[in-house]
Image (tube, rainbow, N blue to C red; front, side, top):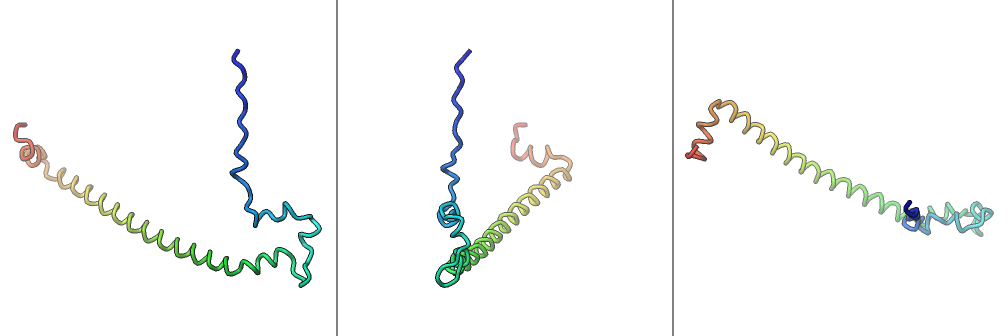
Length: 111
């Protein structure tokens, strides 16, 4: 019987919480809701300091979404046009009925 293969450890180092979001892990529970000298708790202070960054992030996401929608609409329009033209070409070939005379005889005269 072959020796057992060692189990691999999960890549937990790839899933670390960023320092800004992991503050609760390093803070003592007493200080999480304890106000500072100005009477502001850490969560409110963090939110207040990052309000401008939040607005910039929202604006960036809206611009990115808009550009992605424009690009995807252009790609979808091109693909629909391509498929419609291919299907209409196939229907016109089938409608001719004598495919061999019209296409094959002109393209391949030896057949």
